[in-house]
Image 1 (spheres, one colour):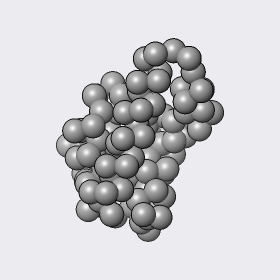
Image 2: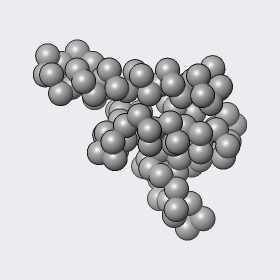
Image 3: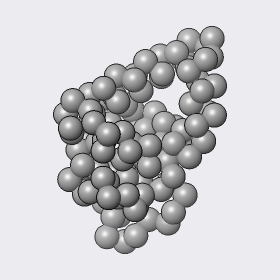
Image 4: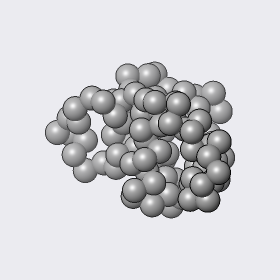
Length: 105
């Protein structure tokens, strides 16, 4: 669980790096996870997290959520927002995290 949490938190940090050609076919979350330079973020775990994200979040939601990791304040704003669409996104994000922990270990 700790390794998965670390990998998920690293996703946004890695979003600021330039993708390498070998990762061109991967999803935004898997690519960011792999580029996070964390020992817990191994290719298998990153692939698993991406697969869960693909099933749990839309493309635009994955892009939005990935930015939260590099700017946690944005996540707080969404979490505390009274906007219904923000509330729905936050609930989907929480469900994604729980499913990723359950599925990916």
